[in-house]
Image (cartoon, rainbow, N blue to C red; front, top):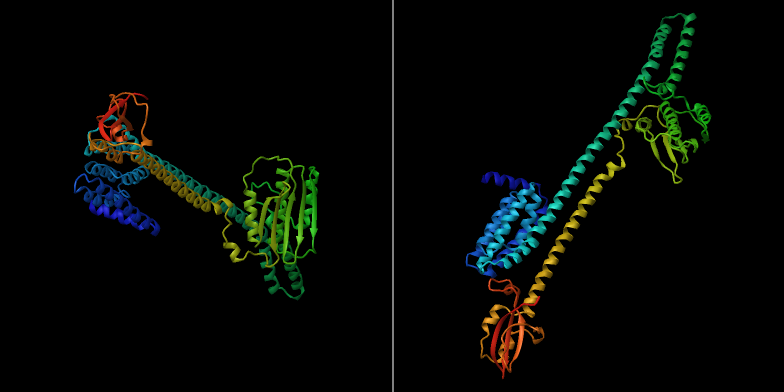
Amino acid sequence: MTASWAGRWREQARRTGTWRLVYEISLVVLVTVAATVGAAIAGWYPWAPWLVGLSTPILMVLRLTYPLAAYLAAALVGLGTGGQSSLLLVVLSASVSYRVARWWQVTAALAVAWACYVVAIVWEGPLSVELAVVLSAMFVMLAVLPAGVARMVRRRRTLLAAMHQRNVQLHSQQGEVARQAQTRERARIARDLHDSLGHKLTLISLYAGMVRSADEEHRAEAVDLVRQTSSAAMTDLRQVLGILGEGDSQSSVRPLSGLDELAEQARASGAQVQVVREGPPRPLATLTEHAAYRVIQEGLTNALRHAHGGAIVLLLRFEPDALVAGVTNTAGQRLIRSTSGQGLLGLTERVRIANGVLYHGPTPDGGFRLAATLPYAGDGHPTPAAEHRPPPATGAQADFAALMDRDRRRSRLVLAATALSIAGFLALCLAGVWLLMAFVVVDRETYDAIHIGQPEDEVRALLPDADAAITDVTGGRTVPDATCVDYPASILDQVGPDSGAGRNIYRFCFRDGILIDKQEIQDQRP
């Protein structure tokens, strides 16, 4: 058992950060000092401060691994030492509520602690119903309220952890969908290359063999065949990426010279399409030309689906170092409410393989823009960096960690503000009780210390100011030719075992500078 507990504590300490460790040590020292000083001031018996001082740090450390056992042990120690320290009760109540999963165990622990907290008053005097009510109210403030706050914090953090796990799962699935789209797009390109070029490359190989073995008369004819087949292969290479796989409903991809025909087909459906070409045309690599055509084709298709009736501009701009191909449309009628998004995922992969960058997003006037920037450099093959570069993270993926971190900081601020509010409320309550007992009441000890026949000056020195005296008290015996002053009894005297149904009043009567009578009156007024 000891080895198991030590192992759990070492594991807990290993996972704890430096600042958390400093916080825990400071909290243990603070609570231990407060509890020990309180026990020494109470002075129920000589060994009480030693017992509290030795047990408190052990219980504070034990609460991290065995919170329920630490809480019950603290309640029993408080029962044997005249009452549990208020600060220790607050800390352990919050800890047991936060760390124990089953709510009925927390409720049972609070019930046991409440019973020990109330019964511990027998060290001071008999227990009455009124005093039990007062102590129960204090227990609610010192134990139940912190436990409730800690329980709410636990539930909120549990919910946040579940939401975080769910978001991680969704992001992982989204990444898997993107990877599947990339794989399908690459497989389609590979099939197109194989089907279109395989036959012609085989012919070129055969014609090359004929060139080596043919005589002078037939060698020129064989060379011409090789040249014609190579030219046809290059033409097919420019168009092969537009031949789609089985079951795909998209149209065949053509070179950029087919943009006018693509625009005419869209105009035939009633769309307002404008083709804009800027800059002097120049030769393009195969993948660059194909990617540019696919960007414009996909943008035009999306505009017809989601902004029917709006103005559409097809842009092809030849810049000094890159080709910009894009589609911009104004707002229009949405014919299709939702799509799978597979088209943009596949298009992103095509542009990435061509070493380009794809942009898509809304315009300030409520429309939409899809554009790609494709560099001229290269021979149509993706660079190793582009081939192995992972797809960019979505905005939700990039910002999720920051959102969780900001939420954790806000949770700490709320918890700190709640703790300060509770501490301030307790301080105000204690200050109010102290002021009430110190300035406007007379306690039992003062009443018993004053005796009849004592000079008036000495008695008034022991009593509060005359302005604190109350008037219009009913009851008590009449003392002729005497000046009487009435003071309310202290709160503890009001709820003590000897108190009656009314309000306790202490009356002092003077005549000729001498205290001639003192009375304890039960004022029956509300």
